[in-house]
Image 1 (cartoon, rainbow, N blue to C red):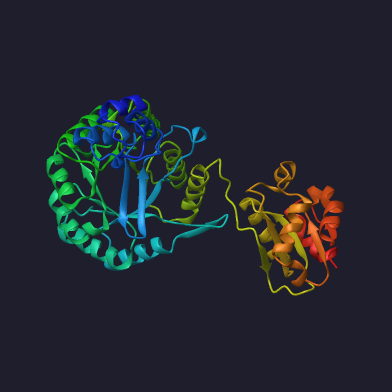
Image 2 (image 1 turned 180 degrees about the vertical axis):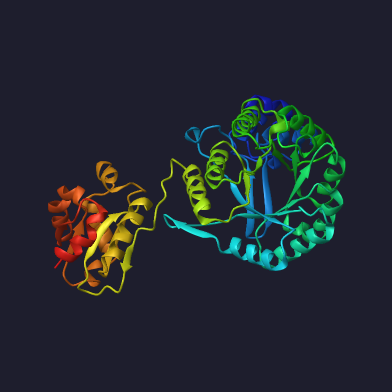
Length: 451
């Protein structure tokens, strides 16, 4: 639990030396509690006090970083049970598995397919985050060969999945700098796996008793406590996922215990392997785990029809509800517009923009779209909140020098805010045309009404 100002004060030297810049140690303690100061500013604080405060300030769910350089994935670090309480910060990482029993050609083809998977939604490019190399053959040689192939063709963060600690160590000698996730330690290999993870400074996944399909939380709890005693710091937990009802219950219990009780053995992100082969159930399982509360999901499918609803669900869940997704306010071009092309106006709410823009493109008519800064609100919401007003639109027209872009001085506003037309004409000096209410009416409007 986070320490209060008085708790912190008890750990400080209490000399009121002012070396930290505060008049008293109590004032400095209050700044620390409000995160307006750093403990490093006190030159006389003891190591015991530092250790105690660092431990208390550790997030209830540890933040684990996987990968290296620009290709990193962060998981964990969440502080709430429900998104509306604040927000979720580190979206569930999606990994695709590659088994080392594949032939060289099939292995290369699968890596390429994973690399090529990409979706664009509301202006965001979404790709697969990680690759999980699975030691299905239980052969060192085949596992290392598959690893070499992946390393040569992909920069994505890795999960090294093998029950054999020797195989894992051989693999880490080749890629420890990539900071992979080692999967996994159980009661039989825990000591060896922890020592390897500490030596190579990588994160270690824990799975319940003997890799059995459905370990109990008690087994996972015991394993986590033992790993912590052995000196493991970066852990990821796997409670198993054979039964969806049990998996959701376990995931919720882990999250609640870590956040509400500050229970350290469960204060780590969770990885879930989706083993269901039915494509519809695979989507259902993945979406359920993203909502509650997997940090990483590992799937076998590279079917875009399976992945699209999953990444869409993830994008929706991990969008900050207090910060709407927006596009840049500016003048956008569609086709090859000239001085006689129509100019439409809308807000910078991403969903609005990506609803309007495909309709303009579908019309086959070159056009301009003026996007104003409405703080991420839709047209009607922005109008009601006075963020989409004649004055704001007119000011945006001036900033983009719209009068030098087209010669006709006509601008088309959304039909739902037809009430703005008169005042916008006064504010801008342009002729204001009232467009369709729905974006779907844009092609017909441009074809039949615009002149």
